Length: 221
Length: 218
Image (cartoon, rainbow over all chains, first blue to last red):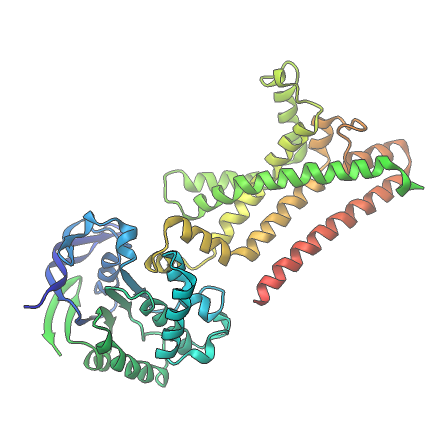
């Protein structure tokens, strides 16, 4: 078995007094793309928030690259991951500034920020949008910017919470096609949640099905 | 001529100094406290929000009374000899405008999409960087909070009169001067001072609105 990026044991999460996630064991190998599928309320977003350290589980062990998560400072950990949510949640600034924001949080030098942003504008085919205010983007364009904003951070773990969920039927396949080309070149461990088999088949190496907060089935794709 | 009278400019300058400083202090207090009320999760938060919202409607004359009793020679802080000084007016005005800035800051931040906080943290923002980003996103309503805070103190008369005493060359500001001129029956002077006060308030708000709307177009 190849090296593990994430290992979850005995994870239990309660929200508003109600148990929402109970995972005995889950292993995610480095560089693999894992799809989380399941109906609304199955616990997909909760698992992703826990893995982004934006939600504290009641109990459980999570190992990140072999290291216990609680031994890594939350900020240091969050600076090793990238997060994209269903809604692009753009900041009221230009596309370039939006993509650069995470790099500014990390206080990287200006020339490095500029070259990395330029690279990802190109790789996601949004160079023509670079000076456009984020508020004037279509949903599809905004989601590409949100992905560039996460990819530019060169994360060890990429967390995508229903990244295509807000897109229309025309934009969605285009973005999936681009990601299908892109993801294998990055070797970034990626977790994404979805309802769509098409997305799983196109992007994932493996999928797990969640039902009522538990892993229902697991399969290679 | 009215405008050749150096006293008028002295009074105008003092008004701007006192209310400007009071607004600035209110901003220093109200911005972080409003942020804490909007983003924090702690017991008593709703109660504190209610207190702040009630404070937004504090009658200046009641504030003046409370500050006067506190700073009065026989009051608990009488030994500081602050009554009838510009400092006492600033204290009263800070009490009037802080709840305005705090309440409007909290409302501006609570109006934002709560997932934005998660997204910023997920992009690697520290707590402080997240808050600064949220302030930047809310800059238009925050400027409105600043304008409302300034407006609440530049136009008040009750507190300034009670704790300042309307002493010429010391604590006379535009609003208390208007009251004095009206009491004397000198309506033309009172009206000229009123127009001056309105003009100053208009110019300051025009500048802030320009900044606000330029930001909105970006």
